[in-house]
Image 1 (cartoon, rainbow, N blue to C red):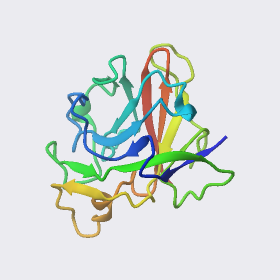
Image 2: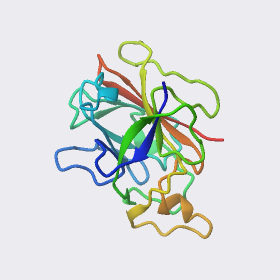
Image 3: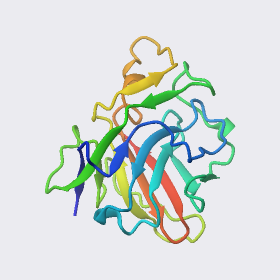
Length: 204
């Protein structure tokens, strides 16, 4: 089954927004740090298999292909990989470690769909829609295959609510709306028993 996230002001889930007061982003040296991408609420029947409500974070402006986080404390995850975040590169010269981009909060709900337009969706759950072919991560702790949670897309027009970045000419679109390497998808996986999460990107 495949679900599309659709906007719903009464939806249980959220894309974007500010970091909740009770959630601590891991210390890191990524350029522009982690961006808060919202949450998936396990009180929804579709996500009742989750061990907890998941706050989603990822350094979307980093060149880092995959990020693994330990969510044993769901409100204070720690980095498993990469450990040397200060050596991770970025394609954007206008960024530094103090750059901040915050996206507007959009409430969503999962809606069962037979077909989903890859150029319009906010996000997908159920089964992934791969851009470059299936890449199912293994949990670095248990070596088990991780379970697909959801993916977020680049064509949702979720706007940046705040940014202190001054983009170079022609690069404005990378900072004024939510996107993943311009036209990509962010794929999010979890191994529920070890409470380990993997965030990985693909683009065209």
